[in-house]
Image (cartoon, rainbow, N blue to C red; front, side, top):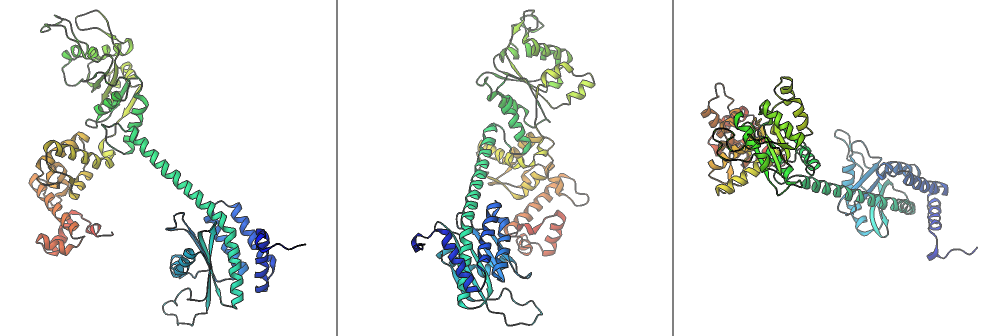
Length: 534
């Protein structure tokens, strides 16, 4: 049989020749080298997780090649970081990162040049532990070969072994190169898969952000889980004419939710009529809702349209629906059922096309049990409930809302207020906000008016937020609370400016180290958090 020309040899022929050469130089068996390559190829094929298969590959190589230590390193697709590292044979006193650091110059050269490198003499794996006499280290050799795919270096493979003849090192280098060739395609495939998964992850995050941004109405602020649920419910029901019941404590923004429902509905551009059922006495509510005829009662000098007529074709927002009287509840139920009503003093029914959005801060179920609210009206209103969580349950939204209000009021008052100080942020985040978003808005409007600089400080906030800082015995008065809040804020500001240096902060404040130490302890300030890098 005519032998293959060197330039036309199939890959399997070249592999076999290299293994035979390795076996001849090492005095071993060809079957050992071929078996190693076949086992590695099988492991790479049968296990899709490359990270999990590297340790078994090193174990197989150690068994056949009898080296002392081994390292496999895989680069990420950008070649600016190491993606995977696996080692074998390291002493317990040597961490893989430490060993990699010692081998890094060799590894970097092999990756940069794409050529194998053999060092007949290499430093020992680790210095002798403390208390152990120094022993002359055994001379070791380091062999490092690149893992290349299509001319691109995707990693490297190195082993450290006892030094023998130069021919023996050359044989091990050839076998290492064969192993690297077997690994190359799988490594490249793994990197492509990892890149694809990373691309999918980033795309998913981008789409998620776009989805959340598209769902969030422009008049609502918040990224908390509770508010994302509100946005989703608005998106689900806005396009229909279904009656919605917005529930939540006073001041959470139920009217904003109602307006968002209207603005995202087909009725957008038509009337959005608001009516607070708790703002007027019972004798006037019926006339305000349904209108009245001339002469219907004393003072009715002319016919007047009610809210239902004004909102025809649009949306009627009934705030605090739990405060309406039983008589009005009956008439509201008729409007919801029959889509018609009568003006006060008239018997002529008037048809209406109005979408009802009701809101309440009351417990309607409890009112039904007490006989204060009709169950049939409740079931008509509660077709699609939306619960708006209180501010204390979505603390992650406090700073977003605070920044929004500071920008709003500084613009309205033409003041250069741009930020909120650390001490003020601590007070805002620690307060329980019983008045919810409305209370936060009022607090920051007051703070912007009091602020003379470009930052909201703690003493600009109301005393109700600062009482928690007056921890001394007997401290509970407004003056003591304000003084304590100002003291706390100044200490925090100086600690921040001095990178947590207590002595420097004390000098700036005109205090001794003992005095500032006592105040830091009293206020519970963690000065270490102001240090750089902490």
